[in-house]
Structures are given as structure tokens and as C-alpha cells.
Length: 315
Image 1 (cartoon, rainbow, N blue to C red):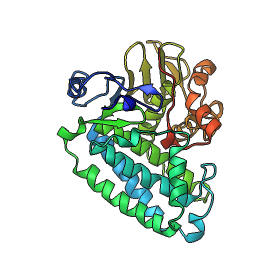
Image 2: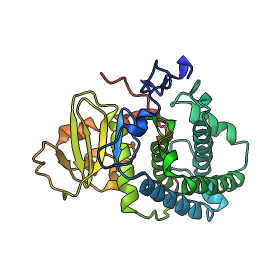
Image 3: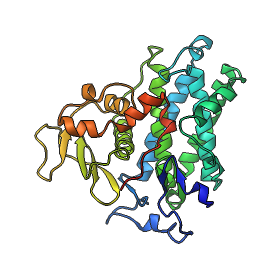
């Protein structure tokens, strides 16, 4: 990989400065009893196949709704500052194409990428194409993505890939794609007064991923927090997200986990700058404040979730 692609979005990718000897290590870095490839710096203790099925269901649902949008709805403002509903679809088509290139081994999209400008520049360039055409392109892209996700097999889950969270196994880059899309689904439909189905498994996956991104902005030491059944741990090693059977409470846990309570969807939106974290979450105010870095980034730049993350290098 060229030296200029050793970092993406402001922090070093695992393995920077090495050749390819660590590519296979992502597949071997597994928790005992789990067959899931992991990144060096992020571990998701979830089943990749189930994850892909959940995210495929989201794309199918969102696509069916996009197909019904009228010309006036396409031109209506979204929750993303300066973007219409059709502009969000332009962005999502661009994201699908960009991730497809990365999955094919083409890392050129990393060259010159600026999360504060590149996605918006792409949207602006594509405004020469009518809204209705991008509606069709989004539906076509969604169909192709569903086929790719449903045809994926276990050996391919761990193939090396990239996402704005760094160098990760392929299935984890799909998680980024799905997280981006679920937030944008609400960006599109909420201002139109359309209902967005709340799917618990989908919400928990996106909450876990949002917490990982938020934790990249926090430099105040170990972090051990649970929201509902989603737990994030960071203590000198990789950031780890896992599901827990423990019920929600405000008393904390015996292992030092700080327990926060809040609706998962509202919390994801707040973590992404679409609402107040202090309104979405109850519990330790200091810990809630440590989770607001991603939201502050979005609030300052007005950018979309796909334009994450120029995080500082963690020490």
C-alpha cells in the first residue's frame, strides 16, 4: 500500500509500515469459541452472518420505501445540512461504489480523501443528474448490494478491507456501510413524516458501531460502558463491543461497567450529532460527556455519518 494511504481519515491504520504478513492475522485473532475475523484495533463479538442478514434486511426495507418517493419528496430537505432527500441518495450510491472499489482491492479512493469535503463534492458533482435518475440508481445499487451480501460466504468474511474506521476484515466494513445507511434512512424519512421501523437487532448493531466511533475521539483512559444490552470496553487493547444479557439499570455493574440507559435509536442519532446525548441517555454525566466527540464533529462540520472520522491518534 502506498505510504500516503497508510492513514485514512486522520488516524493510522493497523499494520502501517509493514507489508502483508499481518493480513491473515485478522482471521486468526478470534475470541475462543467464536469464528469471526477481527481487526487489530476493533473487536465485534457478534456473528458476521447474522450481521449481514440484519443489514441486508435494512437495505431491502429502505429500498422499498425509496421506490415510493415522489418528485416533491426527492427535492425536500433531509436532516443533513444542505442536502435534499435526493442528495442523500446520491451520497449512498457513491458510498456503495466507493466501498465496492475498496472490496475489489482498489485503494485509490483513499488518495486525497477529506471527510469534510470529499462526500459533499461528490454530491454537488452528481446534481447534474436528475433526482429521479438517482432514485433509480439507488434502487439498482441496493439490488446489487443485497446480492453481494447474500452471496458472501464464511471464507470471504475475513478478507482484508478498509473502512473509515481503519483496516478491518470485510464483514466489518459492511457494518460501517450498514450503519451509515440506517442513519441516512432516518435522515431521509423523518423530515418527510414517514415512519421508520425500529428493528431491535439492527438498532443494537448500529449502537455498537456508533460507540466504537465515538470512543475513537475519547483520550481519557479506559472506557467500560453498557447501554441496554450493548457493551463497549477499551482498556489498553482493542476496542471491544459485545452483547450482554444483563438488564438495564442505573446502579452500575460489579466489574466496573458504567451503565447508561436510553433508547438505542435515539442514542445512535445523538451520537451522530442528530440530537442531544444528555437527552437521549441517563446515567453518569461524565461518561456521557466522553461519548460526545463524534457528535461534536458532526455538529461542527455539518457532515454526514459517511464522512467520519478525522479522529486524533490515540496515545
